[in-house]
Image (cartoon, rainbow, N blue to C red; front, side, top):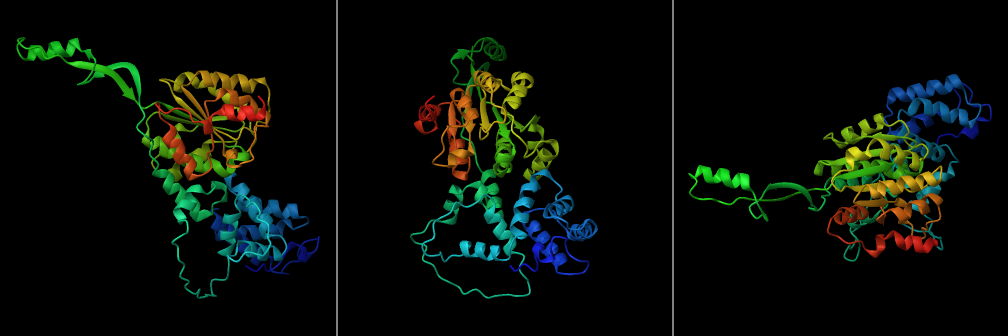
Length: 419
């Protein structure tokens, strides 16, 4: 893609009326945002150009917030707009460098760099803003894929934050097909059963009366078996924004398969979105969740969220030996003894407390943060949740009879941190 102009070309005072190609650049920029998934139409492009003409460009921040006020309509679109703006309105040689890095021919003696979250989606969106009139015929190359890894296997292991738009859509379809194992727990309630251990006197007498009282057909009953309740507490703060929407798709699929699933979102406050996730269409469910939440991609107050849950919801939803899924990176804003007290109360109120942390995708992860060190002693399992493979492993692990392995034992991380 070729940038037609740059903010630096027009001087610090901004562009003169009718000079340069700034309007064309705004149109190209809006097209890139639309490729990223933002609802930017032709009317929004016209409004953005008029807003820039009316406000002027005295500084770069003024130009940024002018476009932001017109083109960004939802909280979750802020991060995509910010990354796209920083990438689009820089020097002209930046995109050439990106294309060189992403090209199939690697540069000699180049050190591998860690890909930034969202970079693949940005590159894919900008590649679609080329002039559509020029059509190039790509030569057909036959590749022997005998010893290569299939695209599906790569998608299974790929980090959610590094997926492009097409891979995210494919991951959502794969998440919708995840099925939990048949894990059931025995309750105190007795129900009719052909192979029950206890005799049901009432049903036996009724059956005998139907036969005239001559024959007594003993009926049996046994303890009922039900799926355990699953309660999910998902962090939607800024540090978790790359994973929150994917996790909501996973929880939506979980809600469709199970009746006793309760979902809560927390950033600086706690929000119950269980009713919204029961909608059949996943996109409508996520839109309803977004409208319900007021602190999306904000700060993190884990202690406050857990306190509100323990005080308002624990007695309502933590029934019949539930499994609690705590999805957060543990980067607490206010670390004090309240966090340890609330996580301990939550742990004692459930059958299993599973902490899902996307930071475990890094091999060099260590429990150094104070919030992480406070929470680790009070969880039963410490798992990674950043790819389709990790979600599949979680689905297989949610079973009443399964024992805890050494890989997910929090004592491993406690010993490494010297706790």
